[in-house]
Image 1 (cartoon, rainbow, N blue to C red):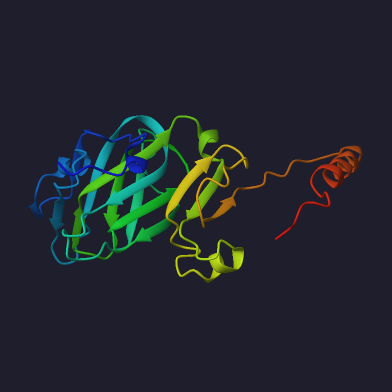
Image 2: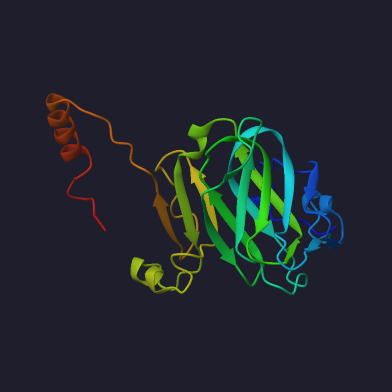
Length: 235
């Protein structure tokens, strides 16, 4: 058995869960190989001309899906992964296309989809868009029953930044679309100085609330004192 990266295994919602796929089609391997935890066992669907190929898995419980790893072996699957759609379903909504940001590591044949947690899903379908062949070695899904858990701070990390400066990070060919690691943090208190020559980017939504005039004046003074101190450098 070939192991999976520890960063992908943690919080997997679909390990050993029931699966299904489009039919009738020609297949290589078994559908459940995609969630068996063994990257050595892969599953390939070969559809007919004009047929949309898909693979589906049932979650262990209703949850907000926000992270999907698609991991193939470099020696498997001669065709590159096509553009994929993620379809979410539950008992009340038959199908909803997920809004996902895609990170891809083509050399390692890994793809990460960071999705907006739109509904409490019970089923996830991966649909190959405009492709007749879909090969999957392992799919791992991270989900939560609390939507607020997902709306945290996205941390993107790039290792081995040559000079360890912002300029060298921006000049790196991996920036901004191919970080080495992507995490969700619960606040902006991200770790630092934990690695040599690395760069990181933190991204989050700002929720604007309606303030009275007095609240605005108080907030303005607090921000001026607390955040815009002489030792802070704005980039």
